[in-house]
View 1 (cartoon, rainbow, N blue to C red):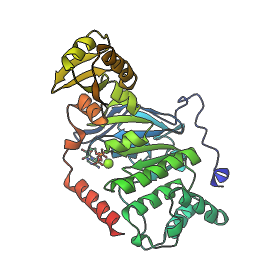
View 2 (view 1 turned 180 degrees about the vertical axis):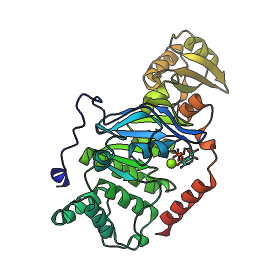
View 3 (view 1 turned 60 degrees about the horizontal axis):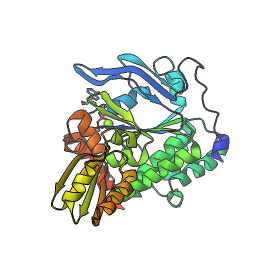
View 4 (view 1 turned 45 degrees about the vertical axis):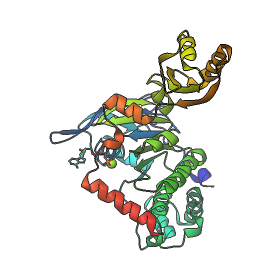
Length: 349
Ligand SMILES: Nc1ncnc2c1ncn2[C@@H]1O[C@H](COP(=O)(O)OP(=O)(O)OP(=O)(O)O)[C@@H](O)[C@H]1O
Ligand SMILES: [Mg+2]
């Protein structure tokens, strides 16, 4: 098993930077007049999937680039696996894996050859390579394509191969920059499965960037919303959504006026409105309140025809903190091209 072969996780400098796998304090990166990453302070726990969610140009790649030592911060500090990204870049690099936003496989080589090249670069001994390649290729479900040339792969398969490659040298943290950019929903979900499997089987900490709300929602243990280089909110997706102040419950009944009067006596129900035979109300922990509301209706002798619950989405959260909808952000020509290239590759097979 690869797990047995992996080196023990780097210890870091005990006591120096606490128990976090990643910790940044006021991390800042400027390009001339533009502050691309603006005083970012985050703590990433061991073994979690941590999402950086933000629109194009928010600063996600720049933040990751500093964590993987490809860009130097202007100010602030960052520790990865206990190593200072400025003082110990070599140690940081040896303890991480990276899957870049832009594709970086050799198209003329087979999947196996691509992985073997990476294994050699990271000093994995020749006798161990085959076994380790077999272990990571299983995680991304590409065993059948191991000896095929990469140029025959779909966009999703290429992405999965890149993820396997990032895992090959047993990193303690894997950085994934826009892992599913431009891929169709089905392919995206197969990549999510691979990422979940990595977390479970390899116990790796994963930091990923995305501007897909569903991806952050479905995959990440915690999400940091980043906008104009600043973290504007950071928590579990559920907590972020709940922080907006509850759920919307809509009840369709035979006597809305009577129900409205009854609901107005409930201390937890706010914003009660009735329209077109339906009552809308805002409550916290909506699922738990539905039985109680139905019981009120029963006691009032009102027949309930339908009940629905609308939970706030990350869209609502982004809007709340930034005043804009993430989906409305325009994409730059460059990103639009990247998106189309990936989508094209994904369709090719
Ligand atoms: N090398 C650079 N020189 C000048 N400006 C840069 C450079 N790299 C990034 N920027 C700018 O910094 C800002 C943040 O860019 P970054 O690539 O980090 O955003 P992002 O959140 O990853 O966006 P995307 O979703 O499009 O990948 C943008 O305004 C970008 O134009
Ligand atoms: Mg980016």
